[in-house]
Amino acid sequence: MRSNNLKGVALSGVFKSNYKVYACIIAFLFLWLVIAPFEFKEFRLSRILHPLLWIATGIAGVWLLQNKRYKPIRVKLIILFGLYLLLTCWFLFSSVFCSLGKGSVVYVNKKNRSNIIICRPYACFLTSDDCEYFISWSITGNLRWTRKLSGSRFDTAKWERFRDPAKNKY
Image (cartoon, rainbow, N blue to C red; front, side):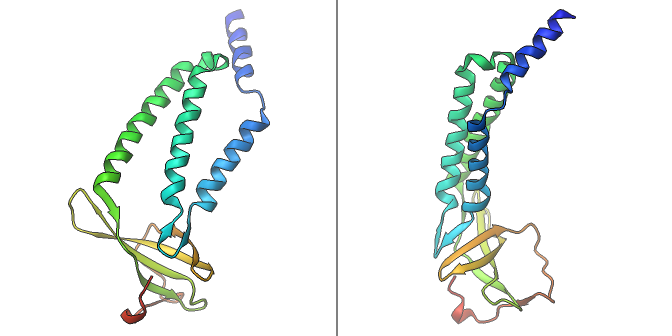
């Protein structure tokens, strides 16, 4: 009975509210979800931010493993760090053999012509190109906010097919 009580005290010390940690987590999520989808002409900010955030996650993991305050959950941290290393190997392997091609406009929003759906070919491991769809909102000029779509069917009441290949210079 006493050992369970001590275990609870040790774990409560690990999860004390630390505003710096919460600020880092909020900044991490803000960069990943809000800032990374920005694009300027052909330059995608996610090409830089995603590797930087992934490296920062690894550095935080190493710091947690070396910090003596987190000894009660060290086994869980080691398992998570092992998964992190496996995912890192997979991402490095796929970044060498997979790539997104140059996108082309497929659909345009009927109400706001600056909102478009882009098809970007994605080739991986010497396979043929598959089209991945992205929705893109124009902010100003060439600055756009783009996110990946999960489906390939679009509501024809909201979107119309873009049929002018001469102006398809995304």
